[in-house]
Length: 358
Image 1: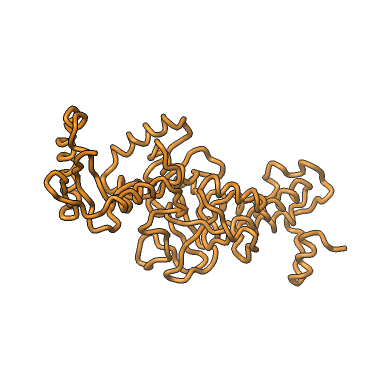
Image 2: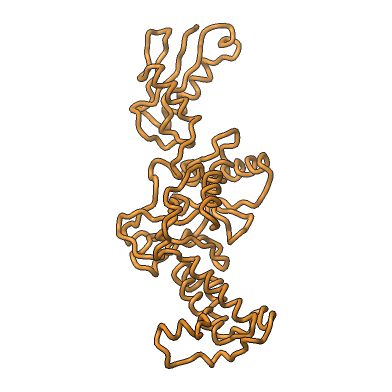
């Protein structure tokens, strides 16, 4: 037993504290006994209390059992709060806000409500390459120390799905977006990292290597106030994607078995680019130019006109023969770019394009 003293955070709401600070109710310690005397815990509690009062003012309620003062909460509530820190929180992002919505159009990063809309973060909070866990934690701590208080708050308010001994690394792993497909370098953004996952997303994220920032493009119309979503998974079978989402983000998606409908986005661009590569590898410049043009149109929707990959595919539509795979396998489908048929309706044109003439 012994006498406890400390302070409570009251009323119970969502203070701007890191690591799911809305769960924080009490800071206290035993202040009687030999251990307390040796450690001078009274002085430590006084120091922390003064800091807390500077940050949170009247919300700090001091108490001391030795002076017959009781806290704002009973110990059952406090213990439940402590236990909640150890439980896996399946929310992808912080409680306030929990997701990003299509906002007021005057905001600089706003997603417009048309398919051609774009949102971009001008600068990431952090950009980090691969390194061992302990080294990563020290690196992030140094970077955070050099940040402004506002940037620190933005980073620390992001969700941590790996709540262990390395809290900074956990936040980074949960939220970092790769700087390019398959890149080992990742960046964390204060706004884009609030976007939740959907297997049928209404937006697509992409790293613009020329401008060195992440962009978000609407791939279908989004109503004002609707949640903006992107896809976290890397493709593959339903079981493979479920396993990836569970391991990386701690949740199971209930929509993986549903059709992609009209929001496949980047998958469409990849499909047409694969068709381009097959055609050009056999010398078919006519079909290759059409597939490249369709890949370009899909890239514009997902990545914008200024994306380096969009511009590259656009150039291939104009000059397909410059691709390194030109006639790499054979010349059996050899055709000139200007031999695309002109007088076919849509059905017959697609039959020609996919070589279904017979």
